[in-house]
Structure formats: C-alpha cells, structure tokens
Length: 364
Image 1 (cartoon, rainbow, N blue to C red):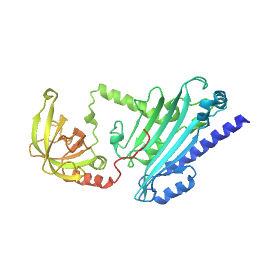
Image 2: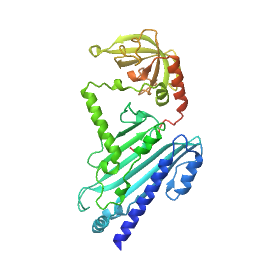
Image 3: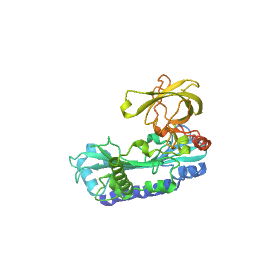
Image 4: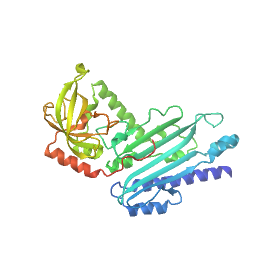
C-alpha cells in the first residue's frame, strides 16, 4: 500500500510537471499576450503566486510544484526515509516563471531541482542538489560567456557548484530563436519517477549537456589555434544597441601608449559628443579614458584604418564601476563601431527594442 502511495504522488508530480513544461514551451516571447498569461494563471493558480501587483503593464508570475515529504523525514525518521527512497520517493521540485511587460510575455523560465544521495540508499550518505534550469536574461552580460555562433543564448554550468551540488543551465534572451529556446527547455522529467535515481547533469538535461560538451571541445580547439576573445565579437549593430547598457558617440582627442606598450596596448581619450542610450554618468564635452588591446590596429572590426585623432566612434558598452567619479570606460574592441549611416540606423533600431528593466532576479 505504501509503495502504491509513494508511486502515485511521484507520478502525479511528474504528470503536472510535464504539463507545466508544455505550457511554458508554448509561450512565444514577444508575441504571447496578457490574455495568454491570464489563461496560464487561471490554470495554475493553485500553485502560482506573484509579489506586488500583477497587471498587463508588469507582472512576474511564478508556479511551484514540489514533493518535499522526504525533507521532513531526513531529520526525524531515517528508517522511513530509506523505505520511502526504495519505493521511488524523490525530493523534487519544479519551478516555472514568466514575465509580462507592456501586455506581452517577454520571459519564460523552467527549473527542475532534486535532492540526490551519493550512495544507493540515504543511510548516512551526504545529499547534494541536482538541478537544471532554462532561464531568460535581459542582456548577455548575465551570461558567463558568449558564443558568437549563437549570441542570444548560452549553455553552461557554474564553476562554484562543487561538492554540494551539480547544475546545468541554459540562458537566453527574449530575442533568441523560439525553436532553439524550446530545444534548450528539454528536461528528463522521468527523473522524478525513476527507481534508479538521476545523479548527474547529463541525466537531467541530456541534450543541453551534449551541446555544452561539444562547445567546450570547439573552444579548446580555438584556444590551441590562437583564439583571442575579440576575434569572436558580435558585430551586429542592432544587437549591440539593444544589449548594451549605454550607447554614445565619442571623439578621439588623444592616443597615448601605456605601461603595457610591449603588448600593443594604448589609451584612448574620448570626448562625449552625444548620448544615444543612457550614459547619464558621462557629461557632454568631458573626456574619459579607456585602455583597449589592439585598438589601434583593429579599432572597430570593420576593416577600417587605425583610430585617428579627431575621429568619432560609436560606442556600445556596459556601465563602468564607480561611473560617476571614475574617469574611465571599461571598453573592449567588441564595443566599438564606425558611425556609418547603416550602423547608426541599426543601433537605433536595437535601442528601441530595449525596454527591459535593468535587473531580473532569477535562479543561478
């Protein structure tokens, strides 16, 4: 009887999780509407919640499914926990989330977390967390790194997650290819009901794990071939205009060699001409300094001549630390473009697409 009860609750959790994943995958970021969000909230209201207000203008809605009976057994009833585990009981939770902004759904997440014991049975063995996540990021600065072959998403695992956990993550922007996003949202939800428990990241998100392994091989091969990070810059001006926190036009007023002269490093002194996006910390007519490797020989990745005194450059960059008081810009060659009419048009199109909040609190 106990075996039937344990199996029933595990299969019920899996059944709900599969339907929740299917619903989240049907969301098309930037196309699904407030009406679509309301249908999901009505369907999952028993397990859903939100903080503050929830309206068409702005709403973050979270749905949580879990089976936490084993957690309550860990402290008080070890023998019952062993029986529960043998009968297929698993400490598992599923969390989904979507964000509505200005009447459209612009973010969707799905996370599977399980408590796994190192040994065959939970008898004096240490438990660790096994998790897989597919989450939206407004901007790629929240990626651990960026692959220019698919700049709108990344697959990775956290370096700090050792010993007490094993994780695998897929992160994507709202503008990632919908087909690719749904491929990234491939979870082995049968982990919830397997009698032989899932133990590793390749068990919980196998397709993402395979892609991560393949990309690591490609990256290692590129390093051996002399890869440099700025060889793989994303050069689409519209992408840069949308993704970067600040965009501005600045004039080169001085070029000086710095202490790393032997490495071909130079300081550019840039006077702000005009702001195109944010950059409120930089006052017009004032000069800021930046140090960029090879910026003289490859300044804007467009086959142009080296940077010249008096030249105006188009900058798309992140906000530097202590921006109000520190007279420096943290630029890389990937942040520089020539202000051609085509580049300016594309950058402004990207700027118009960026109406997201500065921060979005999601799972690691």
